[in-house]
Image 1 (cartoon, each protein chain N blue to C red):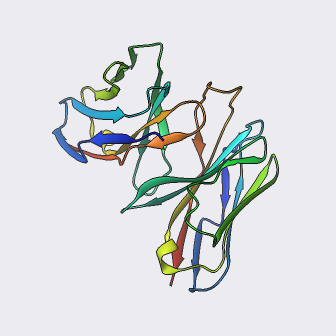
Image 2 (cartoon, rainbow over the protein chains, first blue to last red):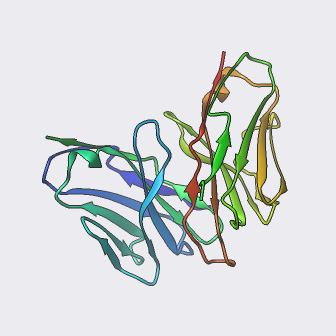
Length: 110
Length: 117
C-alpha cells in the first residue's frame, strides 16, 4: 500500500521568511496530493491540492510542487505570518483513500 | 451548509464501557471516512464507506471497533469494550467522489475527543 513520509517534523522560521515542507510517496499510481493545515484543537482543513497532471500550483502565499518521477511533492509558504503556525499534513491518494504523512509543526516567530 | 457534524464533541468514559460516536456527512457527499488522531500514531484512517458500503476497514485496530452507515446521512463508530489506549480524537470526514480514480476534497468534522479512564 501507499506510504507517505514527511519532513521535517518541526520547523521554526522567522516571520517573513519562507517555509518548505517535503513529502515522498511510494505508490506510483497515486494521482492526488492535498495539503491540510490543522490549528491547535481544530480540525484539519485543506489549504491546497495538486493532481498528477500538474507540476506546480500556486494560491497567494502558498505553492505546491510535484515531481512524479522522483515521487515527491513539497509545500512552500512565502512571507510567513504568525497565523501560519500550525501542523501541516501532506497526503497522497490513488483515488480511493488518503494516506497522510506524520505532520510538520510549523512555528513562525515574530 | 453546516459541514460535517459529529457528536458528542467530548466523551469521558470508564474502561469496559461501550462508546458510540456519531457522524452526519455533508449532504450530497457519497464517501465517508473515520480517522483516529493521536500524538504517537498521527492521523490514521480506520474505515471508509462509498455510497454507504464499507470499502476498506483494514485500519480498524481490532474487533472491539465497528462502524456502520445505515443511510447516506448517518454513520456510527462503536468501541465495545473501550480501553484506555483508545483515548484519542476521532474525526469523521466526507467527500464527493464522482468515480474511481477521481478525487475531491475531504471535509473534516470537528472531531470527538475520547478519554477512557
